[in-house]
Amino acid sequence: MGFDSFLGNTAAVQTIREMLRADRLPGALLFTGPEGVGKRTLALLAARASVCERLPDDTCGECARCRRASEMIAASTQDLERRREMKESARRLEGLMYFDLQLIAPFTRYILSEQIRVLRQIAYTRPFELPRRFFVIDQAQAIHWQAVDLLLKVMEEPPETTTFILVCPNAGELRATVRSRCQRVSFSPVDEEVIAKLLAERSEIRAAQRPLVARLAGGSVGRALDFNLKAYLERREPWLQFLESLSASFGAGAAAGGGRIPPPDWQRIFESTRALTGDREHFEETLAVGYSLLRDLLLVLERGERAGVSHLDLAPRLRAWGAKLGFGGIEALKEGLDQAYRLQVRNVNQQLGFDALAAAMLLGEPRASR
Image (cartoon, rainbow, N blue to C red):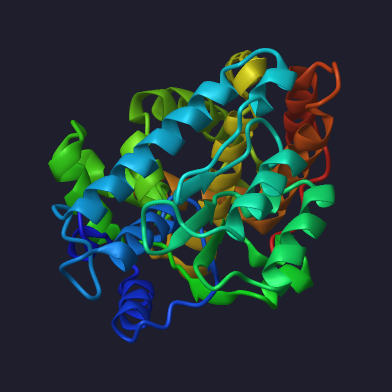
């Protein structure tokens, strides 16, 4: 796999290839941007390409160095997974040793001080097998605060034969002193057309559903390939029932149209709230679906079109719901979701909260649409 097979972010790829051609790879790089767009993949590609015997700005995958670099990546990845599976936390750090090309990531919540301490010890020695040593630190924002100082010391006086590549979704999560010692390479969401084409090649998602998955993936290749559409649609269905029942009896839209407001279908509303809150283990994912639908309602209400809408298959229903709920109703729903999100860590009955939200919207004074 070379740079030509990398999907999206052509500017980032070009930046790395130019560095390699000029033999000016800096001592520390910071790859930052959304999750699932290939930051870690490109970091490992850059490491392999820098040691390739045949190509100045790519990896051939066939020479002895490229093969050995691939073996090191595979071995360090396997070691990382093995240590993550250990139940005894003290054993995770036993016998820790790094290759010339090493992937470093959190064993649990943090990248620990001992992981960075071993990095420092190895960084100042000559590479064992390759002409240059690479440390790819994935999820660099998870470096424990005590370990950050250890990393800074080695970054202040970087070894000539060592390159650090820090991978982080949001550079703002890193200390300014760390950011200042890195050359930043920014990544963007991958185009939906690229993701849809990839889905056609690598997934079993039907052609009619690929645009929906590509939009819901939010520019993340990783999220698109791992997307469980069946589970998502099952999690979305109660929201559709809730919004349908709520909008059918919400006063602002019906009154504005001069029609009679039907009485609330409380049974249907309570059934939908029960379904929304039944799976406590995945309640945060359920809330994320709700937020996404509210965002779509606002977009449809403001723009009157499908531009930027995530749930492409719901466009007609979104227009109908938005017209009935208005901005006031959507704002009330947003406040209800915010309250549910704040309370999810407590042992509270979330269904009662959604029931109360529906009752307040349908029985209380309707909010004025702006």
